[in-house]
Image 1 (cartoon, rainbow, N blue to C red):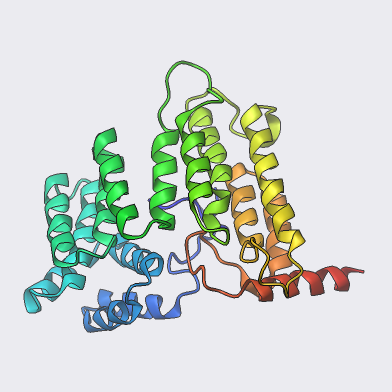
Image 2: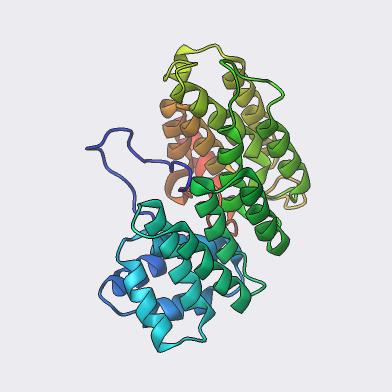
Length: 316
């Protein structure tokens, strides 16, 4: 349900990254949950608190495993007043419904129960949005997104899901430069704080549209072989974001784009199909890569800058 992550192979036999990414606590709690020890998940989600982006990522990664719903239900029965237990069960039921192993109405009902128990938490509405993308109407998707944004206006995962949903609106046999997904992405980027990774959402909009058009057979599957305007525009938007990053010298935190770093640019290049360029950016980032653009926005971009600078100096 999430956008492709850096390092995810396009070949079925290739390596795939752990969805937990670099969150060791999440990986450990997930392993405990699959052994029936849901108390470790309770501790993890309690410690996550109101870091809504991280909480959403953690719940989604836990909930995606087919066995999660069983243990989340046991947790709910043991602690019926736990909003965390109901939220996890709701999102896990969403993924079961996506796989045809539960009904969408059951998934929505549990997510709504979780939303009533934790009215400040956008995560139950994120589950509803994931469900609505697969089975809902445009109005249901918009309503779920609005509920997420009302609780956390810069929610990364929800914005990426809405871009994917809007990009899939297709009429006729050609692209429209005024397609609604471009307006949405530009609006969201303008509304976000200057240091938000949503600044590159317009790039994601162009790459998602290319995915849809290529999937419909309207464009070649290889973006490098296509001179379509959307790929050129995506590169222009990406270059602008890269220029903002280069203007920051690694020390001046007053720069309005001081938290934009190479991770987002590498992710955008990957989505565009420009794998060698994405790999080159990853090598510059060194050990500080963040695999998904909504994960862990609080990591220190100065480390990535210094790694890139040292790599550049070492190359000479």
